[in-house]
Image (cartoon, rainbow, N blue to C red; front, side, top):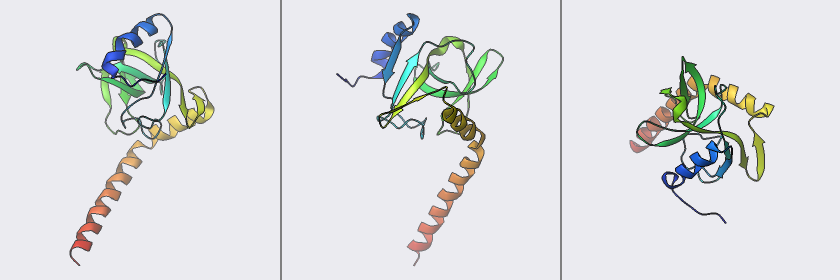
Length: 156
């Protein structure tokens, strides 16, 4: 049976599962990991993290403000991790090992399972992280062109 619960309600249970080597399957909400994870549609499987995390791992962690986040590891600075959502252009710095609750081991989209060790997934990670600035400027130009177009059409 599937039940809709807030992440704040289930996080303590998730933490307990991870401490005992278990796994948690849930449907993420939000758009920060688009296009990889679609809000309220795709399913992710979380497992206990093995430190140090590998680059491009997707970690479920708790920010200093208490918010729970599912983002990709894009780098390290000493003992700290640098995280970023696939649909974001700003890195989040100084994430500690203690904040990380779990990592994604696999995910499901449209009934098909994908493992994070699959070659196609690794190619996606490489492409998506390396083209961040290109995508950022493309979206900026597209939005700007749309605004100009709307202004021109309004003035006719």
